[in-house]
Image 1 (tube, rainbow, N blue to C red):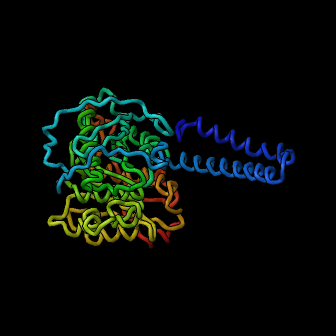
Image 2 (image 1 turned 180 degrees about the vertical axis):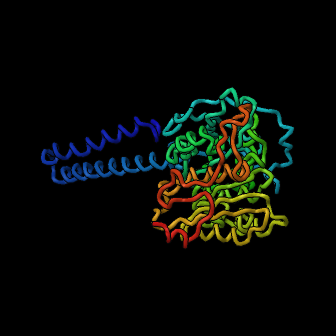
Image 3 (image 1 turned 180 degrees about the horizontal axis):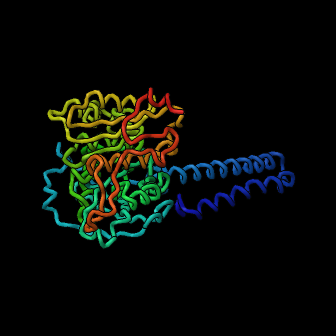
Length: 417
């Protein structure tokens, strides 16, 4: 029985009802010695408490999409088949351009949000560089199958959840396709392909999107194997100009780190409530030694870069939850590196999906501007000069902090109603 399936949820609801009815009927009818009666009543109480806790946990899990399956929850799911030492480049000397194309088999995704706006496609990918074998979800924009776009290549955004987190979260809890598809159709947002690979690769551990010889090559999985698969199977733009990465919480840390570390693979990154030092998450494998911490800290990587990378970072955060880390990067950034910081007041809510979901549209507006050029007009290929819609900063659809697509500050936030 699936952890996130409706069958399991309805079973728990039924058990909760039984747990309430049992003591009402049998509490005073239990027969036998006093010890037996006491034991039976204790068991009824424990059964009621256990089913209630299980139901609440399941509802929270389904709402926030923390654990995909029983393996993730129980810490028995391992998606690392090998973790060779791939060296500083993360390629292990493999020439990616010489690898033969692999055509993947895709199936319609199942779960919350996976059927919305054309549906999400899911495949099981065997990473030829990283040694990771796991699922990858792909959502295609509304224009992808339109005749006018049959020869068009689309930009790509890899989206990453927090830890723990499901690879489906951006389609379900975050409602990215439902929020973005109408704006893509109207030309207000670039028609991005949205790709979400599994990031929970080892039982009970946050990989920190790091390459750690002998344990996991999460960096190469996300930044090499997954993009290669997408390029082999879809009309996607080439890296780095056509690729971005976005995440919230632990995924935000990964997004910033991957962009700073690999400006040859990504042009932009979106970080919502992220952090720089991976030691911020106790379960992070990237925080287990000073060397690993430095190698996976976007602040250290950006500060020590011999040449400022040509990347753009959109970083949002609240006091003591992402804002300070974002400002630290902004202070050391030098052209052509661009860092736009959005201050989110504490009144907007805490470190939850309710805070990040309203930021999806502003973040993708920003990505459209950065990757498409400032105020660049969008026209369907072959449609001539008609139907253009200029891209411009907007607050449409944002809530809570009324996030803008550019920068903000504590002072600006304080002046808002």
